[in-house]
Image (cartoon, rainbow, N blue to C red; front, side, top):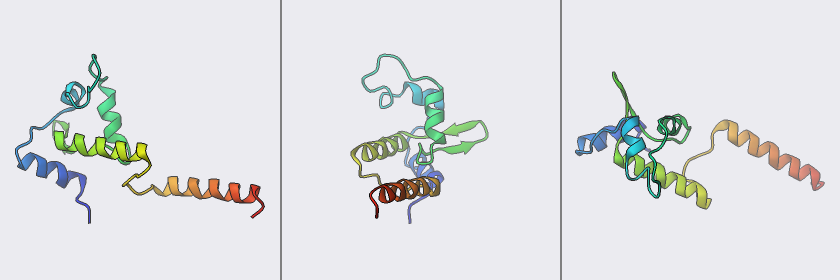
Length: 110
């Protein structure tokens, strides 16, 4: 069983990693790799809101993440880019894929 997002970030924090807010993420060297300007504040928020997104822990003052969570997120993005996506499809994505495949089969006369 895969650890939940909260458990992963909490484990990172317990191991001594520094908590990162959205403002910290946008200036983090990993997020800015190859860029001269820091990311827009909306970028880490979009990453958090993706179905396979950046792991975070909700605190009373807002969301926090860790460098370890950033690395795991970028590893997921890399895997998706290569085509060896480790994350399962959402039910909506699966349904769209099935519909697309059915249309292709019908077009082929199968």
